[in-house]
Length: 88
Image (cartoon, rainbow, N blue to C red; front, top):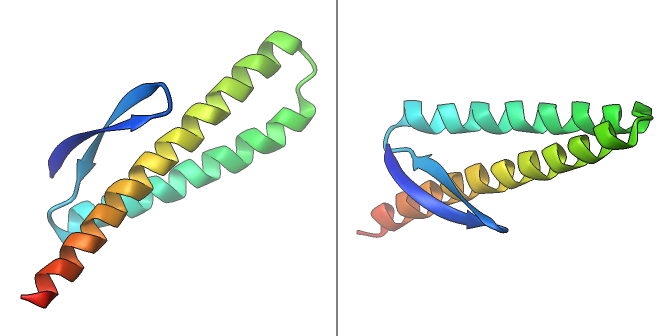
């Protein structure tokens, strides 16, 4: 995998762009995990009553959404590279 840094809102995230099919599958699995975590946290947000915990949960939700965007971007880069290889 190739390490790249993607600016995500106010911070930079490191992401590994896959080289092989196995690496690509790891990213797909990571996307599924992040989407599951986001859905769980969104459900938990409805039940949280403590304002401090609520603020922390909202920040965590934003971080998870940012991570999801980064991983999807890395997967999109791979897709573009694979399409470019077919042209030659």
